[in-house]
Amino acid sequence: MFIFINDSFLAEEKASLSVSDLSIQRGYGIFDFFRTINNRSIHLDDHLERFFYSAERMRLPVGKTKEQLNEIISKLIQRNNIPDSGIRITLTGGYSLDGYSLSRPNLIISQKPLTINDDVVSTIKLVSYAHQRQLPDVKSIDYMMAIWLKPYTEKKGADDLLYHTEGIVTESPRSNFFIVTADDKIVTPANNILKGINRKYVKGIAKKHFTFEERDITLGEAYHAKEAFLTSTTKLVLPVVKIDDKIIGNGKAGKTSLFIRQLLKDLISHY
Amino acid sequence: MFIFINDSFLAEEKASLSVSDLSIQRGYGIFDFFRTINNRSIHLDDHLERFFYSAERMRLPVGKTKEQLNEIISKLIQRNNIPDSGIRITLTGGYSLDGYSLSRPNLIISQKPLTINDDVVSTIKLVSYAHQRQLPDVKSIDYMMAIWLKPYTEKKGADDLLYHTEGIVTESPRSNFFIVTADDKIVTPANNILKGINRKYVKGIAKKHFTFEERDITLGEAYHAKEAFLTSTTKLVLPVVKIDDKIIGNGKAGKTSLFIRQLLKDLISHY
Image (spheres, rainbow over the protein chains, first blue to last red):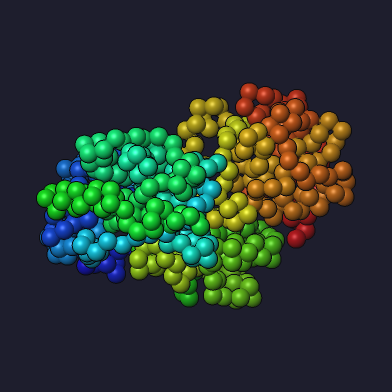
């Protein structure tokens, strides 16, 4: 398997960064992540747009144009030939002389097999936790709290976290959060979140088929929602069946969630 | 220059981590940092104790005892022969198969020349910013906000940040904060901070020579303090002469700060 670093395709075992890199020294970096299905990159334009946005917000010059990244990704896909995969583009703070100041960023593009059986519907249980991600609009590499909280999540019998601030729900560490209200409105938080790519497409679907609202959701409203679901590149639309000790709806994947899931699946498979 | 990684002393240019390391992937890691003066490690026991505390809190097994680390550090000092230096011990989340789960941590011990002219008294200007570090008691590698805020700090004409939460002052990104009150009490924040090693020694000095209080300090109280100073491994006792647009005291290094600074300097030089 090849990994692209800066200007070269390297064998995986040679793909490394000097320990002076600011990701290792100071946790400073951004990334984006997208799927390939049958060697087609899914929503790559959206992911590249967000990648460039994150890079600019973090003052990390990409050093390549979108066209150049597209070309590198095409070559990587050709070389590795892993038809169903996840591709991660990472940009770090670079090799810092003083271990604190930004330097020329290091660009890493890596690919791993990723097969998602879209025909199987899973469900997920969440536990709420009062936390606000730093610079939430940026897809930074900062997942310290989420990883640190893994034992807490397990102890609570949950599969993942639902972050909130003073009772206002924001997101799950790697997914966006949606609810379906009693009167079949689709609602998702507007603020202090990462704007997911599948969130965007689900928004489009929701606007077309339902009443859609982008606004604050309290934890209480989430508890009593008719349905709830997460969206992400790997989860598509993933029904939430429990939040804390509250069963959501009837504790099974809801009708509306499954309807939206099917439309998103179609959209991706026809991409 | 040699860098120790896991079990080997490597030439600096060979000291690298695979891009699958969780520091690069997810910003997950801890470190500690101490000075050597004339090849003597300053307060190494304190730094190792805190390093093991951070490691445990972050669920990162060090894989070595304190005695073993002491021995490795001695060898590194011998090999590199940089009498006046800073030594950094880093422990990362390790090479993660799924890019999210903790693995066997990578241990890195690196050394760099560091000469501090203790005879020259500098001063510093701070700008306040509402931010709480994540897991503040842990010396994690998470300095994303501090580095991100550098242009803000400069725009405000300041040298560094003073973090606060709803007006309660906590710390500077790489230093602890103290004030001297009108009636010559020494006060430092008690909560939501990293407990610095020089903070500990300054606390000892303050208890012996002054009335000392460890408690919340409001930004307002800081603005009107008779004196203020930072403590850290590299800054010793660094007088703060301005916070936001407020001059502290007479805008120069204060008498009490300089007195404490001298005692800390003596303590370190006799270590």
